Image 1 (tube, rainbow, N blue to C red):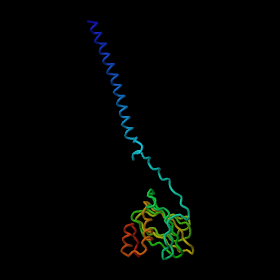
Image 2: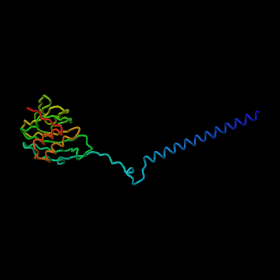
Image 3: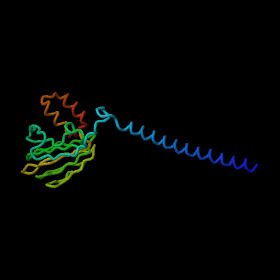
Image 4: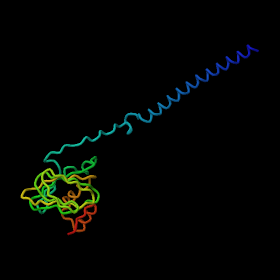
Amino acid sequence: MADAVAILVEYDRAEASVAKRQTRVGRRQFIHSVALASAGATLAPAGTPEAAQPEAPWTGAVLHTADGLDIPPAADGRKMTVKIDSQATPAVRMSMLVEDLPSNTAIRVHLHQREDEIIFIRMGHGIATLGDREIPVGPGATIYVPKGVWHGLRNNGPDVLGMNATYSPPGFEQAPIQRMRRPNRTPAEIEADRKRFGLVYRTP
C-alpha cells in the first residue's frame, strides 16, 4: 500500500512538472507571438508607404530686412511687408507684418474678431488707441491687443513711425495680401473680405 502511495505521489509530481514546463513554453510562445505581431505592425517592408520616414520637423526661419512680401503703398504712403505668411508656411502658429507710417497718417481704429495682436514700435512716436484709452508711444513700446478690443495707431510726429504687428492665431496677414492681389475690388467685395478676416472698423 505504501509503495502504491509513493508511486502516485511521484506521478503527481511528474504531471505537475510537465504542466509547469508546458506553462513556461506557452508563455514563451505567447510573448514571441506578441513580439512578432508588434514588429509586423511597426515595421513595414521597404518600398511601402508605411516604410517612409516621417518628415523632419520644421525648425523655423530667419528673415532679414529685405525678406518678406512687400505690399504696394497705400494712398497715404503707408508701407507694409508681410514677414511671416501662414499660407506660405503652414507650420506657423502666428503671423507677422511690419508697417511704416509717414508723418500725419494713421491706422484706423478697428478690432479683430479672431486674433490677439502684439504691436511693437520700432521707431518714431505716435498715439495708440487701446479700448477707450489713448496713449503716447515711442521706440520700444509694446501694445498687447486681445481679440475684440478696439485699437489704432496714428503718427503725430515729424518722422516715420515704424511698427511690427504679430497675430495669433495666424491668418489676418492674408487681408493685405488679398488687397494687393485684387486692387480693383468693388465696395461689396471689400466688405465681404472684411467679414472673411474678422475685421471691424469703428464708426465715428
